[in-house]
Length: 89
Image (tube, rainbow, N blue to C red; front, side, top):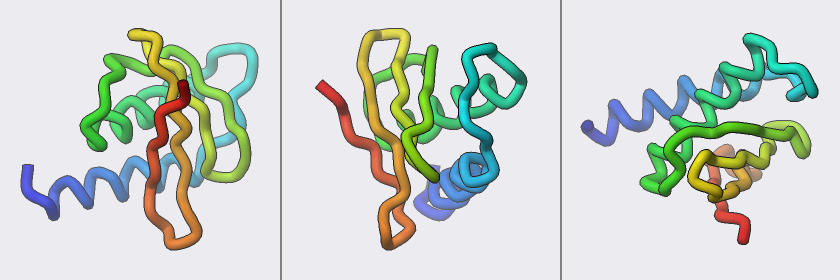
């Protein structure tokens, strides 16, 4: 994948995250989309995950994702508009 294609894919994923609603206790179509988007963002960062099985919104454009392999990540947009993925121990 070229750098441009990767950047465009990441931009598309984050656009979806910007429009996302808070994750509710019941799984809805929106929850599935958020989980898939977070899975894609984590994979684009080259981090192990497999698939996001749950996500909770911490703030605007700020999520904690739990992966099927047990890894947990904070995915957020920083002040400069960059997508940041941090592993939570």
